[in-house]
Image (tube, rainbow, N blue to C red; front, side, top):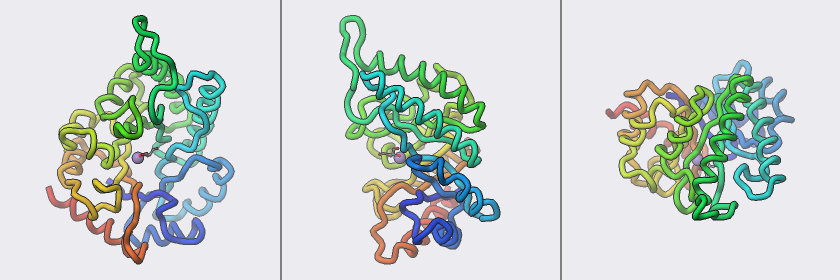
Length: 265
Ligand code: LER
Ligand code: MN
C-alpha cells in the first residue's frame, strides 16, 4: 500500500515543490482534481517521470451531473468523464474517482412505475457499462465513490457500489473506499472492506472528524489489516483538513501515524 496526498493539501508554491515535499514527508502518490487537468498533462509527465511521487488518481472535477433530469447536464457530465478517463490513462493513473450524484435525486419519482432511486441505479449501470469500455481503452479505471447520507442519497456504502460493479462486470469499474464516509455509514469498516475487497482499487484517508489521520477516533489499523489480507497494493490518498501549525510537519506525522497503523495488525 502506498500513501498519497491530494494536490491541494500538499505543501509548496508549485507542483515541483509539492512533489519534493511530499516525497520528503513519506508519500508516493499525488491525487489531482480533474478541473483543468488535461492542459497540465505535459507538465505533470515531465515533473513526475523521474520522481518518487507518481500521479495516482483524479478526484472528480467534471461538470454537470450524470443522473440529472436534464439531458444536457447528463451529456456534459458524460463527455467530461470520458475526457478525464483519457487524461487518467495518459498520466498512468489508477483511475478517475466519480460520485454519481450529490444530494437528493434530480429525477422525478415515477411510482408506482418506478422510484427515482431505482431509475437512477438503472441509468448509472448503463452509463458505467459505457464508461468501463472507455476506461479499458484508456488503460485505467472508473472508481465509484460511496459518500455518506449527508452528501448523497444513492451510493452510501461499499456494498451499494459493489452492486453496480456486479451488474457491469468489468475489471475497469472499481470502488474507491473513503474512511471518512465509511466511519459514518458502515457498521464495521473492516467487515465492509473484506466484503468489497476484490473491487477496491483506491482509498481516501481522513479521520472521523475529517482531519488528518491521528486527530480523530477512526481505527485505521483494523481497516488496513482487512485491505492487506486481500493483498491491496494501491494508493491511499489523504483527503482531509490539516490542523497542524506547521503543515509539512502535519503531513509527516500523518505518514508516520499511518505507517504505524499499517504495521499494527
Ligand atoms: C466528497 O465528500 C468526497 O469524499 C470526494 O472524494 C468526492 O469526490
Ligand atoms: Mn473522498
